[in-house]
Image (cartoon, rainbow, N blue to C red; front, side):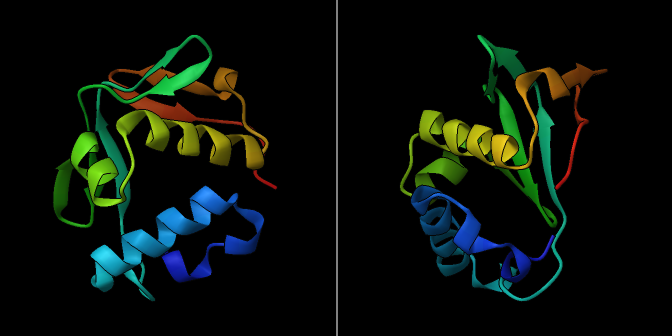
Length: 111
């Protein structure tokens, strides 16, 4: 994923702000392809993504989701809500998010 290629104008204001904060906090992420992954035990709870006991992998960095949220000035819940919002914008629903062998698998439309 290259953060500079994300269609920021189509994101909600919170999403735009989160990307700006992310690239300000981690300037090495701007204008280059970076592996972005989620490791741990993500779950769908009451129709929403829950990332308790989950880490975000950015390149070789492995960060607890709560630390990533904190660096972005968000609570973990707010970050989860933004991820849910991005999934909806991509035409995905909670039914498209499954946990298989401890890995999150997202299927569905990609406009």
